[in-house]
Image (cartoon, rainbow, N blue to C red):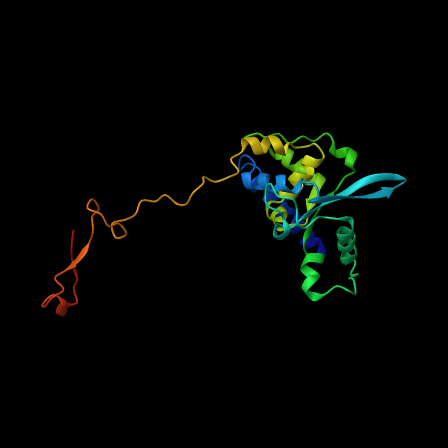
Length: 227
């Protein structure tokens, strides 16, 4: 009964999360830019398995944020079959004996898995368009097809950069088009705030000076300023 209560609570919380985030507007440019990096060759791996003699895509693996390469750079930490197999064995409690403590983060905590909750052929009809407002029906479809193990996905409930990258690899979203439209970079240069009077030193700036610091003003612990 306790497990059933937790399951119902989790479902209610997930639906509440979807309803709260479905109408916030367009896709965040940060999510799009991160997803664009994930689709580079070597930055993802498609894991497949055979069922009834038919090869079906089961999941796609991506680097975590710590090991994600920067834009216009090749991935220094490539997602390989060996690394994915090691992760899958780790889920069942099987850890390589030769693994050192300092290598655990790299070997077992450097990937995120996007699971396909339905067979790949059932995912082909979905096409996420770059629109100002994503409808709740589209959100629910994406939620029923994909699941990622990253924190961002579970915070939002239906989307993250890994899911968006997986959709692009399946032709369900056009990242290249989104990158060309969305403002994914900040203006160059530092802050352009005008300096205040206490930081400026010119004939046109208003400056404060301490005055009347001589007795008797100082004996009253008062400070007088003049402009």
